[in-house]
Length: 439
Image 1 (cartoon, rainbow, N blue to C red):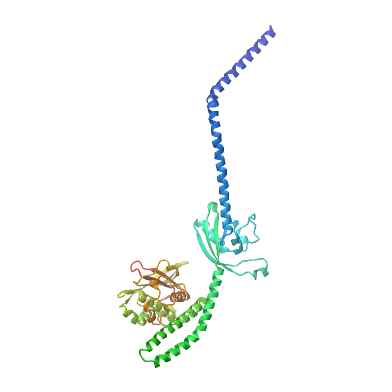
Image 2 (image 1 turned 90 degrees about the vertical axis):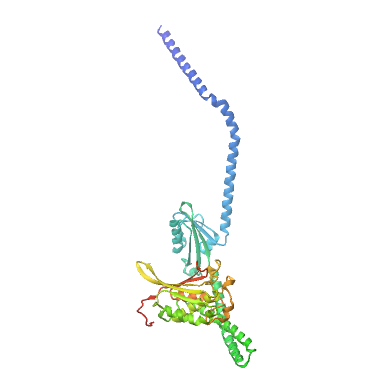
């Protein structure tokens, strides 16, 4: 009986377990029945499309990699230098031109080093930091002095004039385009030296020609002397051109030229210049108006500043329409530098002429630049009195004179008159009581 009870209990337990398994299978069958037949068929239909999408993604990735390689090859062979640094100013990549400009031929792309360790240029490092801080493109120019461990190698390398344009990139990176301006500066120096040598050689024969023309003027009677007078005007123009070029070359070679500085009263100086040019102004019925302090003194070289206003007012007379006024406005501004307030004299010279074209404004102070025909040679050129006109050097000389005085000049078009607007600034403003000359 005991053995029979054991087997009976075992059978009941096995039967109960089998019943649980059957119930569990039925439940799972009901649960997965919607997904077995229909979903499997649907999944099988989606598999080809999925593989197609994967193939398209792979192709797009290959296309992007190919484009990236193409752009990198273009940058590598570009005529300007390009370098890229990470958020810690470590050099990530640079093209061949940048390696030549910055003397990085020994640098390898797999090297991870700070840019300042490879290129001892604090100007470049500051430009990159400035770009990252401001998150705006920046530009800068400086003289790059390469550094080498070998002193003998340094003696064979000369400094370069560089211009850099930087732009912020994602993740704190910065890209920098580099332009080597030294070849252009060398060409300009050779050109200037050649023109200066030519000007020196021309000065003597032109002086001899003028003496001959003066002799003919005395001996010839009208109407024959009319041609000699015309010849005299052209010879004077050539002499003026040669002397202007020599003066400009000397000023640019020595920006801190020796100035005979003394106290100059501005209103009296402008009046004196206008009296010199008054015969030209009367032909067109032009007038001069002055607004500003009456007793305004500046420390300047009187002859040089006279030359500045003579040129500027002569240009205004040439390009002003008849019966108009040329305005000279003077005012004293205050500037603050390192908590020190200093006065600056601002002079605005405004005419009612044709003004400058927008394309010419950035170049009006370049030597020999002749832009808009409306402001090139005019019929009055030959009648100008002592001014540096008609040769494209006048405004360049004016700018150099002001730079030598620590000042500046800016060319604009006046919004009301539409004419030329020259804005001059002088830093050396004196007290009204200092009326005596001094060196």
